[in-house]
Image (cartoon, rainbow, N blue to C red):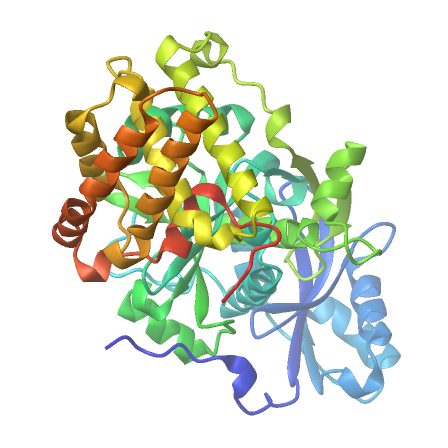
Length: 484
């Protein structure tokens, strides 16, 4: 049985703040920042521009509402007396500030360490729990924004953050439906060239792709997909989750599999999550997605991620699919005859689809047809394939076998789509697209029992997806999707 992840919002209110620790951070780009920390979490920070650290810490504390000020603060001795004089009602201690040093180590640490044994969120204490809490809260906001409802994997977000060492990082959101769980998150690539190389490699090798991999991946996972040790840590530290999902960041691919992200990559992941969540919001009109508005204006936005240690300024720019120009020779070659024919067939399915909608069908009822037609057109792209007008039982049987292998959907959900395929084939003949559609339709309907048997044998029940989940993975979600 999977262990429960505690949602901190449902717990009793936390006790009032007690002690803040003040100190100085230096960002990756060399900027100095004055910061107050509580339980490893940044509470207030300010760039040291024309101020001493003592002046910055005093000003930050005075700017906090009296009712929300800590009851005690700790700073190094040289700043203690000035704080005692300036801030009333707060006990001031002088001493070491290792909590600030731990945050500085997180900013400085760029080591992608292999995972030895069970993963740990805190990496043996190298990542403060407060930093993890901030990342978890940002991830919960991203989960609420659900960028994958509006953006596809090729709708990219470019993120720059000099303070954390991010330069032209390319983020791609993903949403992979599974039977009882969906893996959601953001894959982060070093730059556009790496992302394009990754796309080409996946097309050629699929899951065996080993080059051009992401720098790190931000995953939103449920308890059943996290290791028991990580689940325990989430509950132990009361880290906030949303809809049962905890955030886990994986680093570069290692010989033994994906490594866990370095401490600095945790901060970089936090900045990316904030950027993706921002562009997933709506403009002031409440209707226009910020991503679309920025892309139309070819604009970017810079905002301050105030609670990320180091006060980084994050620049975010949307990149539309049509703006991505591949340097691959594959993309520049003309389509083969088989590919051109497959595209022609697909266009006919789209016309049939639109006519069906006009006749009163809804999009959801045609999902099985679209899935089956997608596999059919994919098989037609093979140079050895023949045109539909010459198909016989052999080609139909091969197509059904391909469906059973590639579409892990329950037979009861997928089989109605065969009736629509047969109707489309008859429609192709009556509209003069090619002859023989009626005879081919009869062949397709004749293999219905065979497809049912193959689907039942090919996939274990626990590995099956719903038709809706598989359709969303392949085609995305319709804007005017009709739910039942």
